[in-house]
Image 1 (cartoon, rainbow, N blue to C red):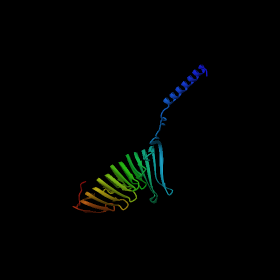
Image 2: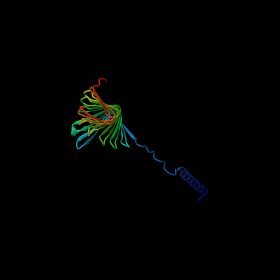
Image 3: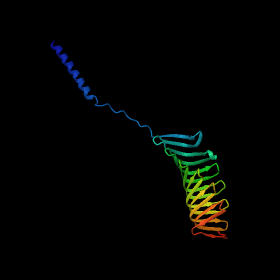
Image 4: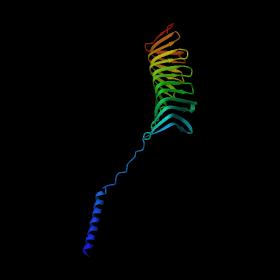
Length: 244
């Protein structure tokens, strides 16, 4: 091999070595991580309806102007909601309206607030500031300026009212006032009102006004539109009273 050929071979070898060294130095030790994009945890819908059915019958249906669903918990935030609960065995439908609320998917409970109005097809109505629905117990609990009225005009006012839907039982506490259709009134700290049986028991600072009768006691019971009532515990009855 001539001197020229040896120089050319040495030059090629040096160039090859330089290329290998550059490649080794510039090659990353591990590939760059792939950027991970998490899916959104909430999904928003403008206006929607959810329906729950059992044995081909609608149990409840929920409509709102805006719905936000948490993809992890399946809880649903609601705006301008209308919720209907059906009692086909009684041919009765309940309708709840509120400004906003949240439905908890796991236990089928719901909390609503703002211009709360609850009505049913029998003519009963309840209004208040806040309401909670406990799905498994079929129980409504309302707080804040609560007023419950029957179709015949009888009225209950209180700070907190619980309503067992299927048992048709209303329990209330805190500044209770019950007004009957004939003007008879009952005041107490707590009451238990069996709506279908038209029976009421009351306890704590009980006071009853009916016509010219004023009655006071620790515990009272009344039925048949206050035509019959009784008192227990420090009971006192005044007749012929003409004041208000």
